[in-house]
Amino acid sequence: MADTVRIGGVEIKKTAILAPMASVADRAYRLICREFGAAACVSEMVSAKGICYSDRKTAELCTVTPGERPMGIQLFGCEPEFMARAVEIVLEYSPDFIDINMGCPVPKVAGNGSGSALMKDVGLAAAVAEAAVKAAGNVPVTAKIRSGWSGDSVNAAEVAKALEASGVAAVAVHGRTRDQFYSGSADISVIRDVKNAVKIPVIGNGDVTGAGSCLKMYRETGCDLVMIGRGSYGNPFVFAEIEAAVDGREYVPPTVEERMQVMLRHIRMIVEMSAKTEPFAMHEARKHAAWYMNGGYGSAKFRARCYQLSSYAEAENLADEFINLQSGRMHKKSAEISLD
Image (cartoon, rainbow, N blue to C red; front, side):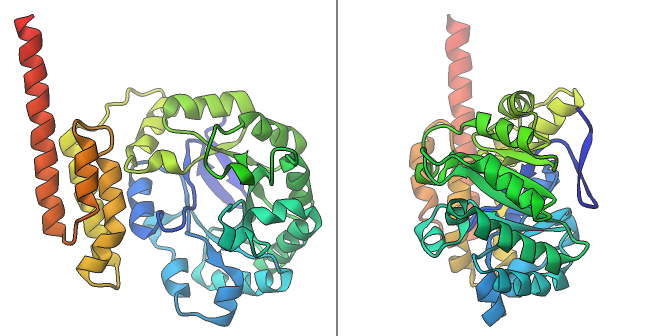
């Protein structure tokens, strides 16, 4: 397969990109994932109407730093006029592309006609996209959609064709319907159907957790790029694994010590980049700490303790305990094998 894919004038390595994830993929998360090989990233979703009325959090959400590029800013909304104005506002932050959220399933977004609710109104989805494209000028506009609103209304290919006709430069497809939320399995055949229906690049998303599932997504859908969301939780290393597989290199997974070092650096970044006090910033860091410890011996108890963290020093101590427990477990196993 080709080494890169072009979305408008943006060239992206054909490995995997980081999905936009509200309350998860903040700047610290994006920088960590880019460092480990994510080919591009997207901001947390920003309300189009919200930034038209208030700029209180616009700079925090929309600022693009050099280490994050190529990076897109994701907007959600269902009113073409507000979407156009929001695009004009975020262009001041020089994003590499602008993404429209047409896939978010949460009630506070979809319940207001935005996000995945746009899958129910193809004409409105196309109008929102067209308004964004006209306002964006030379900056490419992409859209992230789902398979459909429900199992009996899978219409991703139809929506994708309408978006293509509106001038959208690429479309990302999550292989689940809105009523699935994140349960069950992603249906990647829908991504293949979209790829066969349009000429613009198609980005496959859903259930990619490593090199094997990423290469399967490419192979079975013909998609131009792969997007990873939950598969990166506590595992930015997944991007290095995929990059190695695509390049034909051997991949060496991180040791427990290396995982904990990255976890602590990630937490430091969250604390340092936050405008809040350390205890409040640690509230944001807790879930990340728990994810990094997932899968280890005794990790259930450690994850529970992660949700009590209130300082970076406590995180350091917990990481040391976790490393010592894993090391002790390995030594015990080795001794048992030797005795056998």
